[in-house]
Length: 335
Image (cartoon, rainbow, N blue to C red; front, side, top):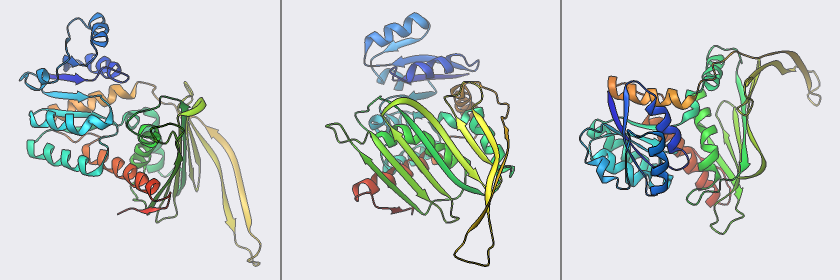
């Protein structure tokens, strides 16, 4: 049995508490939040959970094995370091940290203390993304050509990070989970309509040695909520619409190929339009699978799917995108 503490009961904290509380091999012992009204609401739902406004109570509790941190990303490094130094396993909400150096330091500390460090990239645990990975690895799609994502909604404007770190982080994690190839370059552009100068609309492009290209469109300023990913392959194409309640994945047996022509000035293209296949997937909550993975990693000392190194790779892409923005939206080479 693993006993955990949860720090942060704001936007995402209630979802984390609900999922960990439902696990048979986990006890949510204590929840920390600075706002007492939130803790009062929690007590109504979970009378058995202890509440406090002081994180030290969790850190000093020898019965607590692990801590889940669901606070703003700007606090992740400071709080995460405290958790690991207290000798407890750590699950951080996404993204892992606000910089590559902070992520690296946490990884080193976790290794030194021999503790599990994991990041909540929930989408990796959804059946939709797992199915897409299966289709790609089985060769159903053919050679990957492009990845094009759109993730937009009206708000929520963040005060510590821009829209790339808040929304695009999901699609970046999905892409890194699906393919192993490292990018050549990362390029970002964006605009801020607020006084804090944090981009609320941003576009990100990643180019790869194989010719594969990835594009991300993220916005807090859209009147409609869009969660759409298009993946093009030489054999088939995938449309992943996460807003769709049941038919989230559609596989199109459509494509194109170039036909050799004696006249180099003329390009002949053969278009193929075939059937649309809708794979059957389980629609269970990805967050539940993520919570199970964290507890299993602790109990059996195994590497979780969304492990610390994976979290660092996501932060690396975001950091390069941030560097591109600072350099006048010029491409930055992946090192």
